[in-house]
Every structure is written in C-alpha cells, then in structure tokens.
Image (cartoon, rainbow, N blue to C red; front, side, top):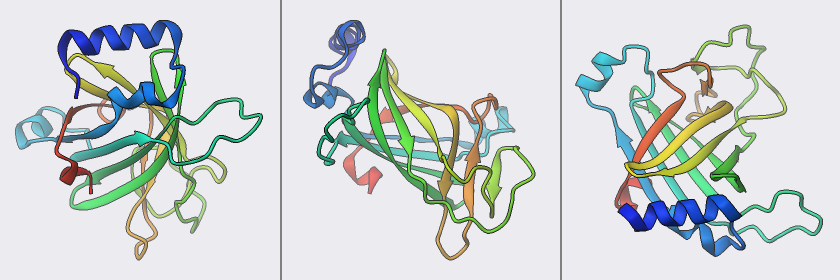
Length: 185
C-alpha cells in the first residue's frame, strides 16, 4: 500500500488527468475496513452501520466496445447493521477525483416501500437502480460516500436489504483504513 506523500501525489496526479488505464487504480486496490466501537456509536446515535468491509480490485469484466464509462475496478462492499451482514458488488469507473461504483441490482422485491428512511427493510424503494457510492483516497484512508442512495441485500433467507441515503449525515460517509485481506473475505 502507498501512504503519506506518495498517496497524495498519486491522487493529485490522477485527479488532474484521470487514469489512462486500469492499472492506475491499483493504489486504491486492496482491503479496507472500519469497525465502530461503542464510544463512537454512543456519540453517533443515528448511525445504523456497525462495520464496513470493502475490497477493491482491477476489474475482471472485459471492455465493451462503445462503452461510455469504462469499468476500471470491481468493489465488494459489506456493511453490518447489528449482527446482520448486507453486501453488494460495485462496477467502478473513474470520475474526477476517485471511483464511482454502481451497486448491483439484487435486492429481493417483496412489497412496495412507502418510507425513504434509512434502515433494514424487506422491500425495495426503486425497482431499476440499487444506487451508487464513491471511493476517494484521503490521507487518513479511503473515503466511501453514498452518492445517490445505496441498497445492499441481506441474507437470502430473510429477503431483507439495508437502505442508506446520502442525506443522512450519520450513515452516508465512512472513512476506511487498510486491512488484512482476510477482513474482506
């Protein structure tokens, strides 16, 4: 992993020009994690995310001719609310200063949602888009920010998913630290 001045220089260089090829996102590649302790959660009572694990890798999807936004990376994102894990796969492309990842459309549709509050649900808000998130390198780690909204499917047996909104200050941005690969499995 690259840290300190090297990371800032690389981030600035890529931000000015954009990545020329998928290999240039390698500094973002790796495993990242954040586990929120009791003191943090006590100070942020509205936060429903207890743990975040993110794995970023160069994409394994071949380039499609005529593609408007070339996919550079695959992101495997898992978030825990209580003891329940919710996860999605993101197809990531470059935009200005980082990666934008569109979440996979895989939450189960069981009934119409009427609420747009953050939380665990057994229904879908939107039937055509699971939302997106951004990844941006910061000196302290990797910032994951909910861009539009994010729907992460939960355990299949329950048919539930975790819904996060960019408008909720407690659940829209997560500063992740580099972690051992085992944390992302």
